[in-house]
Image (cartoon, rainbow, N blue to C red; front, side):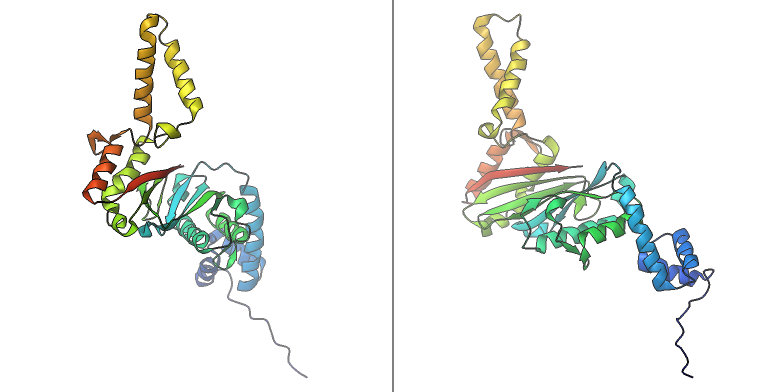
Length: 302
């Protein structure tokens, strides 16, 4: 009579080596690994499946929880011509600094950057077909939520690319080389990209300016007219006792000050308050015989 092949059974759950093996495979906690092995007669494969199934249920419950922490991730920023920014949120600052979370964020940003079929910017709704670590994004997120015990949300992403501009980026108080809670990007259009790339270190202060001073627009022309109207109304209400013949001059003076303090080109340079950003950029342009014009800026915060 032919002897039936027996299914391999691993040692009892008291074996720390077996528990360690299951933890390495799934990233689950000791207690969960013990329970998984106990429920599945110390069968590693069955225990892995059991943990995955339980993890999905736990993750689904956690996906409704509020997320107030997280990171802004910059991938491939050293190129200054082609990179991706991704904003991802979690529940606590502790997890935002966790290596498993940061590694996932970097892998996700890389996957978004390299995928040519998705939109240039969007939210998690635009990433349904994305694969991360050879899994669907949804499965990868579920695994991570199960492992770290917190809800995780992909809030926004944006790809940057140009043949006529350079992008200067800055991360404030970095968690690692690519992640922080505050990050900024400024796009500078140029007539000589190769020369402009040699000026990246010198121009870095403009990206720092955006993070530090949070300008609402690049210049007066790009400010929303409603913001100017609202500011004017506030100024008028503050001038109740001022003679009518002096009001217009005061209003214009205060508006000019508001515009100067709240536009990137008008602000005093954080490293040299004697000159504004516009003058600083103009000086670099003249000194290097190159055209440099700021065309866009983005500030990312958690």
